[in-house]
Image (cartoon, rainbow, N blue to C red; front, side, top):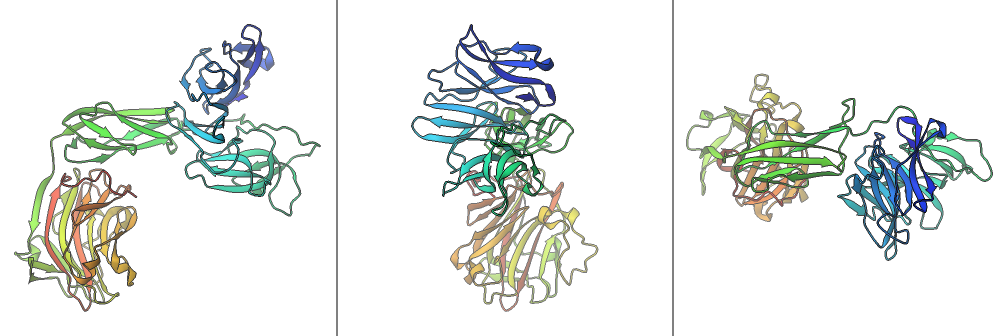
Length: 543
């Protein structure tokens, strides 16, 4: 097995009398130099180099009998070292480890005495093991097609041999050729096969790029076809070389939650997505962190948060948890002139009328352009921003009747270039600069049962059945300090988007509507900085 980036070095196995079995050796100088790497009574079988050429993943019988091999990682510079024990199942024989091209995971085949054969993935530190990654029969792993896909050979439902690519996250697979592989591949996205790409093509020996089969290379055939194992011997392919936690710029408030990010790059600084990410907190009395990097403060103080991509690369940061920051900015009860706090727009302009909730805003848009208003002064968002409002929205026809609420970046708006009469406030890069809810979600009868909630992502959300008839419904929009948007309806959190908005340091709130042949009512709006803790956002549906 050739070492990545250094084709003069090769790992293989040799039999030694002192152990009575096979041991790993490192061969160099054309076979003249042989360095023994293991000295165990059980057999050791060569496996796979890490993409940076520093470590070896291999099969070992040192902890078991009857050849029920486990997998481990060894540092060749320290013979017999155990950097990580990857598997430990006395009922299974694990074999042929294949290190992922990014470095974070290792794929292998497992033969289990009770449950049969399967394919598995384990993180590079052995902490996260997952088997049965697809429904395809067998245990063979021929190589990696990408950091997310494996190359496997398996029969179809009729028993015909196929070469397939399997997504390790979803289990979905696609067929790239009929036939069989001729050996394992340590060359990402390539496989040697005796195969055909279409039913009209003859079976032949090919070097097959599984992500672009049309550019396969035909090799001179032999009978029978040769064994062909593929290695990358040129410049090392890009792999995950470092990860960095994206930290908040200031302490996290005790009454807030914050989603940390983890970005990765290769040795040249090119972005590489980290996989097999795991988070943990150094002091759960100060803050906990979940599998997605969401920090939940528990008490004031300092805490170290750690993240790793499969144990392959990692980072840690020190976070400060400060006192609660949620505080009321204002409550708009519509008793004073609209333009004291808001900038009205549209023709006709918004009005205020009495209702069972007291004075209420009527945004007052018609069938041509919307009408509404937005805040005259922007509000800082570094600790989060939220508002809650009750609305009554009787729908009498499916067109020209909808209401929308926005939290948006003032830097993305062109207020000076708009006459505040026709059209709506222009917002550049709207998807990433605004958190919006709109009811109904579309102009059809079925859409009257839902609203659409956007903020880097979009989700259709069911609303109370009587919202369409004008029953009062309480809506809350919460922008978190990390830029994510949350929605609650009648006191229940419903959505928390994963995407982060780029709002900058402040935001404005806007209300607008079309109300042709109906009247929408907007009750008092309460606006606050920070994140109120009267709702539990932990188990809300994410997207």
